Image 1 (cartoon, rainbow, N blue to C red):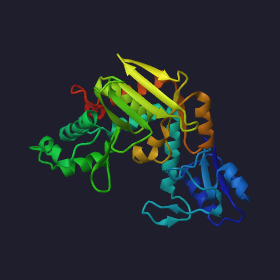
Image 2: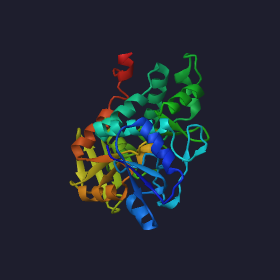
Image 3: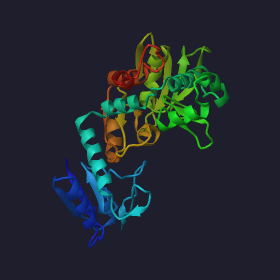
Length: 328
């Protein structure tokens, strides 16, 4: 693992960062002096000091950072501003980086989503009711429509929805309405999915949170789908038509990038925006080069389809029990 700390001359926050790193790792830490804004952008310094782990800034905000020579401040565990990450924050960042090193991003994503699946029967029943509403109407159900599912459970619908939100099985908007139920989004995304026979009135339009979510809808529902997305580097369309269990990609050279920012958090914040279709491997590589803070891998169509089926295929299967429940 390569650890590098970039800093401006006489940075007062450099010594505390190096001292804390020494407490959590015996790996060599190199330092790089940055004296111009051009070099800050070139090497990825988002203020002084900046730590890179294998070239990735583990404390970069979602959507990337602004590079420059300014003094960098961090958020401590209590939310207060601190001069450098705490020992525990650094330990967590190094552990997360080690996990990303040892496992392909697709495997990490699969484990991530598996942990998010509800184990309590009423929570799982509510999740499935939400997914079925999206599949039937393109929209989530209103809260009152879920009261029949929670009736007799001893828990209110609000309590169950909050638990699903906290477990990242769904996401609630600030007004309490259901905004996301992976793989579905209640608001438009770049991944539009037609459920039903393409070209006919027999179907419904939905939006998926990411490319892998879009690919997971057909195996989850056992229905034909038409995915309409776009390569964010070229603006060219990418479509995937699934019929009789077989997917046809246009263009045939299309691939999917799977990645996530370091640091954890809800999927919608840390990875959904980074799981996209590209018209070919070169387009994906160009995006990766321009987003060095997002570690990940490029999947070919078969690999992407398999990951989508693995993540979402079992969600509506009444005979499937989440892995964590089996272990318990």
